Length: 445
Picture 1 (cartoon, rainbow, N blue to C red):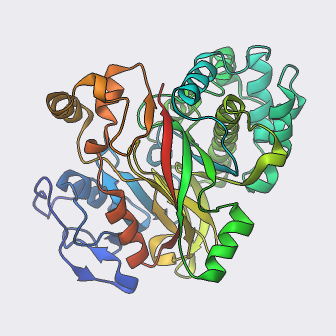
Picture 2 (picture 1 turned 120 degrees about the vertical axis):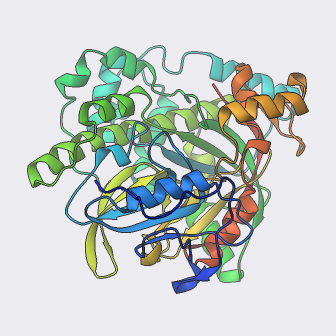
């Protein structure tokens, strides 16, 4: 692994110099030539994140490094980055949240509102997700098959089975076969299986939204309606979660290894595929829980759905060569692929259509991106806002969260402006906005 020693440290909170590159992708002078940051002059960018990106870009074999406009520092690796490596895979760059991603399901009518809606969602999300299901059997099934594995597990509710049967059309599974659950994970299989259908901590959430706007010309709007079920005034369920404890176990198992042999790469990719399938199933169960709470868990009522993964690695073509593209808190955006840039509990999330820009490693930001650390948010938000006001947002949406720290840490003030992030992605030629999803109820556990 390389280290960056020649450049002075970037200052905290620095903005990027405006050096235009291909398709208006912006680059920092502190970065190597093969590294860029997709951010216009309005994006607030923390210097520590640039430093981390610069360091990772010097790792042996790194041919392309792209920081998203939501780029922010992680413990060792920046979050909001796509990294293309020649001939090698580095599991540490995927990290402990392997398989993390988002699922969107759209539907037409919502019959509940106000306190009654909040009460139903709270009751459903407080109850055990799948009380009649053997957690070990569920884990083994979704490890092998993803959401469709739920169809063969005794005790899974019929409405969830129907939803799982449709899942292949929602998210093409091009992952390698994951086989049986490895013995390394078998000891805690019951714990992992019991977490199926749970949100998790950090920035993960389950949300009911209204489709506030549909963008583009008439053809683009028709495509959004027909392909993804996005109609202005309709509704969407949005789940952002991952593989829960499995991803952490996978990261610990593979550590800081650099995988260059086909055998080692295949072994890791097989286990990563199992974690990603679990994460997809987890998001489907989460969406089903919300749909069930509002009486909409019937396939005939649903318009469209898609699922995408933020933390994984794939062999992809970029600039005339095959690279192992590692995404860390970063969404794929291949040509005509639907993706979603996550806002906060008080701001819109944006469905976007990928443009397949190889200079960006066919990637976009996965969200607004933090502008405060969690400790900073606890101190600053607690000073500015009383706790009793944190379960309602300025836009009128409701927040269901019993964790005081999460209410502070995930406050909209702790994040960058998602509008500026989306503007940067469009200016870079990475994707174009399709629809805005405004939160009505956000669940954080």
